[in-house]
Image 1: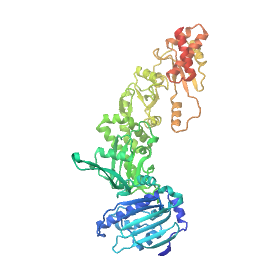
Image 2 (image 1 turned 45 degrees about the vertical axis):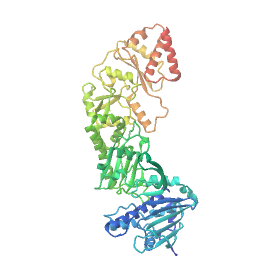
Image 3 (image 1 turned 90 degrees about the horizontal axis):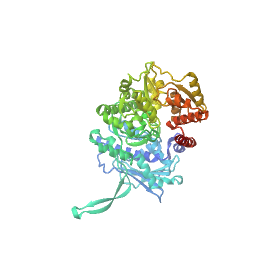
Image 4 (image 1 turned 120 degrees about the vertical axis):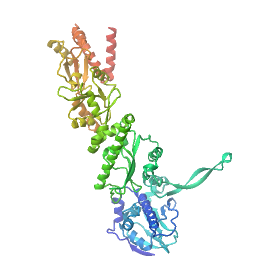
Length: 622
C-alpha cells in the first residue's frame, strides 16, 4: 500500500468542511449520491459518443446500512476511476472532475456536481472513509483509497471486480443516528426522490397475482426497494400528461393535501434552462401556512424550499417544483446567489403566472369567479408586492359585493360612478369586512341606493391603500366608519328638528355614559329612518390599527376609537327621550340606547351585556 498526504491548502480542511462549508450535516448523502449520479451520467455520455464500447447494464445506485459494522455504503456502476484518477480527484481537494468532464463533453453530458468538495462531505458523519473503484477502461484493476479524516491517506489495490465505485462510510460514535434505516430513508426521500437513475435501498415485499380466472393465486415476492421516481412529471412534455397525471404528481409531492385548483407547466431552454410545475393551492384566506412549498431542484437533485431569491414573495404561496441547472448555488448548494439569470427566471415565472390567470379569466369567467375565494389573497398579494404583476393582474382582479356579484375594478367604477361620487368628484367605494357585525350599516347603505363590497381577506387593508394610491379618483370607506351622509358627502344637508338648546340637553345625556377613552359623542341631522344611536369607527385610525396588527406590531393596550352618533331627527330622541319627566328615567333610557348601539356592533360583552339584557326585560315589563 502506498502512503501519502492529501493536497490541501490547510491542514484543518476537514474541520472547515464540518463546521463551515456545509450548513446542514445531512447533505452528505445528497452529495455522495450526486457523485454516483455523475459517474453514471458520464458513462452514458461516453457510450453515446462512442468512447465506451461495453455494455452499460443495470445502472441502479445502491445505498445500504450495516448497523453492526457501523457503515453506510453508496455503490454505483458508473465510470469508476483508475489509480491515477483517484490520486488526482480524491487527493487534490476541490479539483472538480465534474468540471473537467463538462469542459470536454459539455454538449453531451448532464452532470450535477460542479464542486470537488462534494465527496469530502462524507467526513461530516464518517470517522473513516473507504473508496473501492474500478474504471470502465479495459484492464483496470480494483483500487482502494482509505482516509480517516485527516490529510493522511492510504491507496492500493483491492479485489473489487465490477465497474463503478463503492464509498463506505464508517460512521463515527457521535453520528450513530445515521445508522437507522428510517433516518436514511427520510434523507433519500428528501434529496433523491426524483433523481434520474434508480436508487435502491434494501428490499420490500409486494403482492402479485399468478394464474387466471378461478385459478388466480395471490403471492408475495421480494423486490428491490427503489426509492425514487426517475422520470417525474416536470421533466416530461405537457403534451404527454393528462390532468390525472398532474394531480397524481401533486399527491406525490404533498400526500394527503387537498387537490390544487390548476397548474402551470414551465418548460424553457433559452435564454436559460428551466423546467417545473407550479400548482395553485386552495388558500382560503390564509398566507403563512402556505409558504415555502415550492421545491428547488438542480438536475433533479433537491436543493431547498427557501426560494425567495428566485421568485417574488407572493409566488411562494404556490406549490410545486422548479428545476434549473442555471440557478447559481454556493459550494454547499445551501444558498442561492443573485445574478442576471436569477432575475430573468424571476421575470419569466411571474409572466407565466399572470398569463395563466389571465387566460382562465378570459376563457371561462364563471370558473374564474368560482375560484376567486382561493385566488383572492394570492392575486392581491401579487399586486402589492410586484409591480410587473400589478400591471398585468389589475385587469383580472375581482371585487365581490354583498349580493355575491363579481366585478373587475373598471366594471365596478362604472357601476357606482353615477350614485357614489361625492361632492369632490371622488368615487366612494363602501365596503364591509364582517357582514354579520355590519349588517345594519350595510342595510342603511343599500336603502340609500348604494352598493357595498365585501372585503374580508387578510391583506385587504393593504390592498385598499394601494388602490387609493394608484387610482387617485377612488376613496374606500367601511360602512361603519361614519354615517352615510358623511361617507358619501353630497351638497345637500338635512336640517335638525331639534333646537340648539334641546341638542345640548341630548348631548349632555349621552356624554354621561360615554366615558370610554377614545370615544366621542356627535350629534347629526339624519333621516328619521336611520337608527337613533349609532357607533362609527373612524377610517384612518381603524386602518392603522388593522395594518399594524397584521404586521404583528399592534398598538399596545390602546382602547378602540369610535364615535357615538346621535340622530337628532329620530322620533325616539326628539319625542320619547326629551319628553320624559324624570331625570333618572332620561339617564337610564340614554344609557339603554347607547348600549343598544354597542350591541349592534358586537361591542358589549360579559357583565355589561348581561346587565343590558336585564334592563331590556325591565323596559318590557314597565
